[in-house]
Structure formats: structure tokens, C-alpha cells
Image (cartoon, rainbow, N blue to C red; front, top):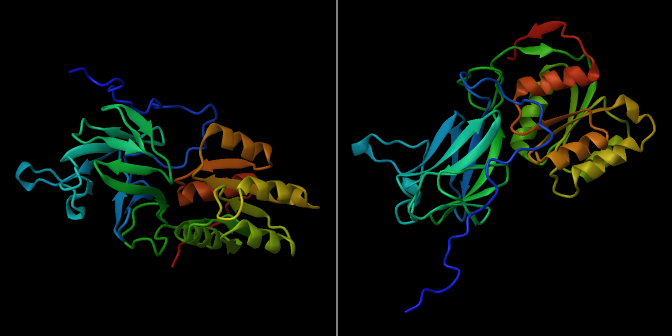
Length: 296
């Protein structure tokens, strides 16, 4: 018998790729808890897994006898039946970037449908789909509204927020309700008058009645590319008073260049901490911190 041709395994070839235009650093040092989590939605079920970001997050199945407790435990989701190894893959954070690495699993790991070579690192981005064995997970980076350690969850800001604004207006255009809520809360406590919209059409309607001092914009909107909204803004009379900060999960070098060329003053690649959002707002508007106020 002859072996069929083309039996060689085809792996995803993009490994540890780098962008030519690096995003502004969006998180603090890893020795402190990072102000975001990675959310993994189990496709086909209502299940959502959240993992606090650290340098290495193991994906697999728990084994109490071997004292193995992965950060992402897929045992309750029929992990064994879905071909998930005990130590299947790992999510890594390096230089403010997130990577996925297959750990030599039996059934492999796929990123957006492409098989990963074992032990090789691949960029992991907001909106990607991971297949662990046969179990599909949608990846989202979720901002946690903290400037430091918190025990109150995502509903409040425990640390003091610098008062950098005095009634300046801010328009947040963000399709993810949880991210929009955090950004709005932080900017409001920092002294801004905040309006939040979830799509470009509503943003255009709002800007027709007056341009904001600060625009916080996601590029991946449900109805329009955020770049088109940015270009629309820059065609309006008096638009020079509006400073734009793009906070987006679309973090390729090409998108960053387009955003800056389109009129944004800063680009922050998601995940974005509250602290860096406020620093960006302060920088682009040339504001001075005058008072530190605790958030109640």
C-alpha cells in the first residue's frame, strides 16, 4: 500500500509576529494584578469562563491527584469527551501582548480554524476563536474597572480617580456594553460630562448637535468601521477642538497607522486599563490633575 500524498500536517505559519507600529502600553507591570480579564465563551452553550490575567494561564483539565488546577478548567464542559488534554495549551502575556501556545496536546489547538504548531507562540487577539481539542472558545478581553486591587468586582472603582477635567465633554463610541460602562464610569469620576453610544450612526447624530472635547472610539463597530466615523468627524467645522483616542481590539500596525492618519491623537490597543485611558485623555487634552477624589 502507498501512503496518500499530502499527509504532512499543515500548521499555522504566523508565529510570534510583531507589528511595525507598537501600541501605547495599556497595562501595568505583571507583578501587580492586571486590570483586565480574558473571557472565554464556550461556543454553543451559555457558559462563559473568565480568567484573571497573569503571565501564564494554563488551559486544560483539572487532576486533583496530580495537584493540577488549570486557570481555564474545561472539565465541567465535557473537556475529556471533547479531546482536551490535562495540560493542553497556555495563554501567555509578554511585553503587553497576549499569545497562545499548544503544549503538545493530543488533539491539537486551533486559532481561527488553523492548527498551531506545538510549543510555538501565536498572537491572541480580542475576537479570536480558539479550538481546544474539539471545544470552541470565543476570546474577549474585558476591562475590569480598577486602578489597583479591588474586591468589589466590576461594579465600582475602589481606588482614587484623578480629577483631570472640569466639565469637558466626552463621547464614548463602544459596542461592548461592559467596556463602555467602565470607560463611562472612569471618565465621569475624572470630571467629564460623558455620553455613551454603541454605534457610529448614533455617534454621528450626537455630533450633529455639538462636537465633544474627547472622543473615545472603538474601530470595530456593529454598523460601520470606526475609521469612517473618525474621518467624518475631521470633515466637520470646528473639529480641531475634538481630540480622539482610539481604544480598539483591532491592534495590527496597519489599523494603527490608519487611525493616526485619520485624525486620532493616540491609539491604545485593548485591553486598556482605566489608568491608561485617563492618562491618554489627560495627554491629548493637555489637562492638569488638580484634585484626587475617591470614588464612592
